[in-house]
Length: 129
Image (cartoon, rainbow, N blue to C red; front, side):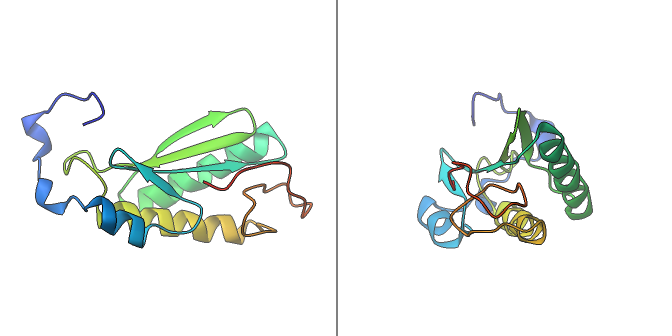
């Protein structure tokens, strides 16, 4: 479980965990999976734009009551979904990833293969995950 010790208070329920094949079939565009986790990187034209995006993802996660790990690396925001009490990816993670994609699209992603959200319509070398 990603090096995390099992905590019986978490109500561990492995029945909800999806198979790797199901994750690959259902994961939204721009996301990749590995070791029972969904990942996506999104690059911005500034640090502040990335922070603003992270805050919007946090608000979305609160509304869904399912929270991704969010890591900010200067102009790049990395999102990771993993359901701890299932020990892997569940439909809640897929739904969260889909909702994040809606947010990315609403922010004006210029090119489906680009995760650059500078608003300029240019791909600044971001790689779709």
